[in-house]
Image (cartoon, rainbow, N blue to C red):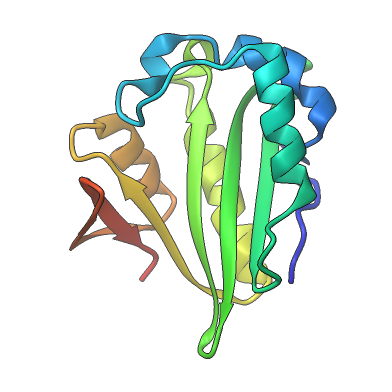
Length: 167
């Protein structure tokens, strides 16, 4: 199974998630508006630290890899969001379900697109043949990120979200 490693783009470094990122990420993800489409509410530092402990411990299923990164904006030296891929090994090769979240102050700068493209490219370099994302039909910004990363909306739905797939 593949594991997360640093990925660099023009403006970002995708850093493999560590528990120590929780304090800064609690602030990055503190806007309740980030949960408009995905539900839930912002987690405090301790809850986020516990969540990151579970995530970094890895999936209990050896056929499933949990790959998580925080996004560091290099010119400001701060964390600004996350990307993730859940990779499943199958008979026809590996498949990944991806997602991204960018803190509100950093939205609208193309950083989500930059990070999603980097993630899709990184997965492709590791022969992950299927890449999908699920996007709420009213979340136009996230749909734009999926499209810019090369994914195409399908007519498939899951839990009220449209399935996007890399052709």
